[in-house]
Structures are given as C-alpha cells and as structure tokens.
Image (cartoon, rainbow, N blue to C red):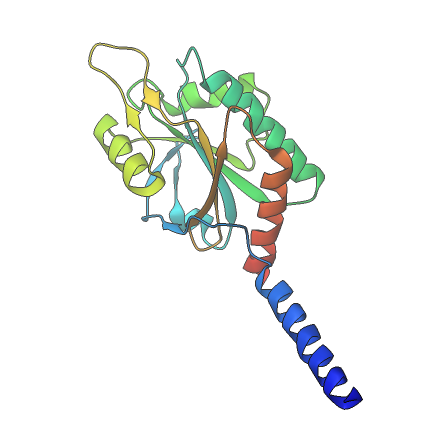
Length: 196
C-alpha cells in the first residue's frame, strides 16, 4: 500500500513539473503571423522585417499631426521602453505612421525627439501609401488605419502589440493605459524563448 502511495505521489509530482514547464509561454497568445515588410525609417533608411529577425519587438500605429490619442501613446511607449531597459530587456519598438504623405522621415525623427525617446531601439516607419498602411494594419494587426477624405486626422487603433522573434504577434495591450508590468513580463518570456 505504501509503495502504491509513493508511486501515485511520484506521478503527481512529475505531472505538476510537466504542467508548469508547459505554462512558461505568454497567456492566451494571439498567434497572428506578420507578412514581410520593408519601409523607410526616421533616418531615411530602409528598415523592415529582416532587421527584426530573431528579435522581440513592440509595435504601434501613430502619426505626427495627431491631436488626440498619439500623444499619450508616445509617452506611454516611452515609459514602457524605459522600464524594459531598466530590466535589461532588449526589445525593439516599431511605430508605423498612419499618415505617410505627411510623415516624412524628418517629421518622424523630430516627433520622436520631442518625446526624448531612445531612437537606437525605436524605429518610426513611413514610405508607403495610405492604402498600403491601411491594408497592412488590418491584415497583420487586425487594426484600423483610415484617413477620411479631406480630413487631417487618421482613425486608427491604439493598441501596443508584442511580437516574438519569429514575427508572430503574441499579445496586444491598451496603448492608452498600458499594463507595463504585464508587457515587461511577457517580453521577458518571449526573449527567453528566443534564446532557446
């Protein structure tokens, strides 16, 4: 009887270890694939998915003439970047402009500098048409990016997206009220997975 009890306890212990090992990934991953892309960054240089291979990155959609949500989004993403850096987590940030005809590389660089962000790991992208970014945002990030005719403001999503080292979108978060601790925790998990 005692041997059976020990055997049962052993199986339970092994099962618990196995289950805890399986639970190391991020909770409820989205698993949205992203297509390959190559656009123009704030330094007027080509930047795209090939530059992000093997890296964990955060993405969002903003524009420089935005009078509402982009201001807090930029400030919040800067706060996330600072927290990631303070934890020693190497995460790239990619902001796609949803107003590419207005947002030249120079405009994007000036905009980012006004928030005093670290541009060594933050890439602001343009160099596509309005229709291209609308399609790209919807098809990859399930996000809207529509500029009504004769309007200066763009209707766009306000989420932050966490992308793993294989270019798969794993999580999205509220960019207007980001759960910084959750983002940092999930990024750490993805970085660990990237290291194998």
